Image (cartoon, rainbow over all chains, first blue to last red; front, side, top):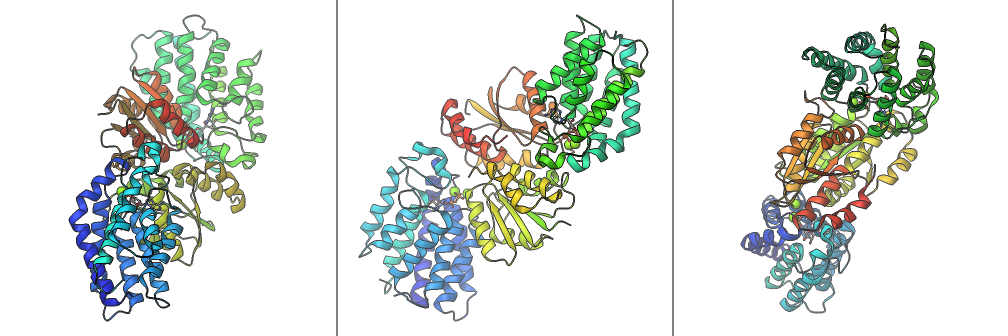
Amino acid sequence: MLTVENTQKWLNNFYQKIEEHKDYLSELDTPIGDGDHGNNMMRGMVGVKESMARLQNPDLQALFKAIAMGLISKVGGASGPLYGTAFLEMAKKCTETQAAADLILVGLAGIKKRGGATEGDKTMVDVWSPVAHSSQLTTEVIAAAVAATKDMQAKKGRASYLGERSIGHLDPGAVSSGYLFTALIETEGIL
Amino acid sequence: MLTVENTQKWLNNFYQKIEEHKDYLSELDTPIGDGDHGNNMMRGMVGVKESMARLQNPDLQALFKAIAMGLISKVGGASGPLYGTAFLEMAKKCTETQAAADLILVGLAGIKKRGGATEGDKTMVDVWSPVAHSSQLTTEVIAAAVAATKDMQAKKGRASYLGERSIGHLDPGAVSSGYLFTALIETEGIL
Amino acid sequence: MKKLGIILISHVSEIADGLPKLLTQVAQDVSFTSAGGTDTNDVGTSMEKILTAINNNDAAELLAFYDIGSAKMNLELAIEMTDKQVHLYDTALVEGAYTAATLIQADVPLADIEKQLAPLKIK
Amino acid sequence: MKKLGIILISHVSEIADGLPKLLTQVAQDVSFTSAGGTDTNDVGTSMEKILTAINNNDAAELLAFYDIGSAKMNLELAIEMTDKQVHLYDTALVEGAYTAATLIQADVPLADIEKQLAPLKIK
Ligand SMILES: Nc1ncnc2c1ncn2[C@@H]1O[C@H](COP(=O)(O)OP(=O)(O)O)[C@@H](O)[C@H]1O
Ligand SMILES: Nc1ncnc2c1ncn2[C@@H]1O[C@H](COP(=O)(O)OP(=O)(O)O)[C@@H](O)[C@H]1O
Ligand SMILES: [Mg+2]
Ligand SMILES: [Mg+2]
Ligand SMILES: [Mg+2]
Ligand SMILES: [Mg+2]
């Protein structure tokens, strides 16, 4: 069950993981992209932190919106509107249900709508979807989903220009999404 | 028969016509183009004048090359490489024949090669071609060829984007080509 | 001023801001606004900049052209946040915008403009 | 440095000079040179500037992309005046150059690059 408090903790934990793995994410984005995913996400999470800090006694919806706008205004790359739309959709849904599984599901739908990608296209969808559909979210589920992007051929995003040559590399957005859900598992009281 | 002397006179006469009709040519280029044909040709003819002035005792080939390079380096629009290529082709041919009819014919071929336009596409080709193929070049031949572009639909150049809407306007490059050949008729000893 | 305006979105501010120079030549009466680069002017796009380009355009109905995928996503987000009517085209950026500008200037109706844009759809 | 380079021709210098910013991000080892505007930096193209862009490119074999028709004519003239091998593509300027840059960086052979450029041919 997501609350204002544990959602803030979750995002702060995600911030730390992005900070820690920033260079790795940009490295992953170099052979099959433009090498900025780590920097993009770091800027985005700084935006989220600032955005959250400006809130005064927010409800869950206001919090999700602030997270979304932080990402949308600061990332600058595809992952900004994608993660941003996911959190916007969560903001819409969270007055109805606060169950993590339900909110991840609407987030996934938002990402799919925004980017037009589906499962197997070697994008963050390939982590969001197995996570959203897992009966019990574990680090193994996440690790398997992230790893599976390695053998996929990219059909969306910059990596898709490389066709078959995109095979053999992890998708950077899948890896950062893995951190998001690992941070979720690590935050007490959500699952 | 073209000589160094009468070719210089011809181009100087063309310069004057361009100077006189500069605004009209740009006006013609406004509804079906970008409104710069007069300025382009004026810059080009200043280039030709400078280019010719730098020559010392040129032969006809050197003169044609200088004319071509003046146009190519100064016009900045489609008419630069088009007129330029016409004069480059004349430069190649003029060691073999100095008859105006022959040289206009190779000039026409150069324009067609460079721009890919053919008769009826509403371009300068529609003046060069009737002129090149006329048994006797008169101002009537020129006037008729220029006027005929009015009812044509443009298939090449900026005007072609307008499709049927290009009908009803004279082609600016056809009009400037009309001046070129009127200047030729007016230059004694060429025809 | 024409009823239809054009907005231009690129990852690079110089491209977005340079395009109106090409287009104004053939479309003096069309309003062009552009959004290029991130909010810190790095390579990327900014939803806020796109929204500003939409709002600053003199026309109420806009044709939008962009360079690559992530620009489209920020564009769509901006479109969801404005009251203006914005038509988004997956055509070649420069060539699509050039074609549209020429046709708007000549008062061609939107349906006919879209017919001429169709073969320029490449993404 | 890659064996293939890219030259970018636009009527507007900002577009020609801005494009390498977009492309270098995905192709750090490709040489990009550009020619935009006339010799007096007005809207248009300059055969001499194009020739300079060809000559200044670090690669001996080049892929050339341009915006609209008259740029192509000056480009062809420049190609006739250089010893370098220059391949001219009638593709969308930005999108064609982006695709080519990505593929050159990944060491894709020219024949395969051309296959991927084919659907982007719009002029
Ligand atoms: N159309 C899309 N649908 C879903 N995810 C996408 C799409 N395009 C890109 N992505 C995700 O975004 C990641 C790249 O993000 P980032 O590097 O920040 O953006 P950019 O490619 O604009 O530089 C990819 O690894 C992929 O996971
Ligand atoms: N592909 C072409 N073949 C032949 N002539 C052409 C072509 N494109 C344009 N023209 C001629 O060039 C003229 C326009 O010249 P100008 O205005 O100087 O160039 P631009 O269109 O680049 O501004 C047209 O009126 C037409 O006669
Ligand atoms: Mg990236
Ligand atoms: Mg990026
Ligand atoms: Mg013109
Ligand atoms: Mg022009």
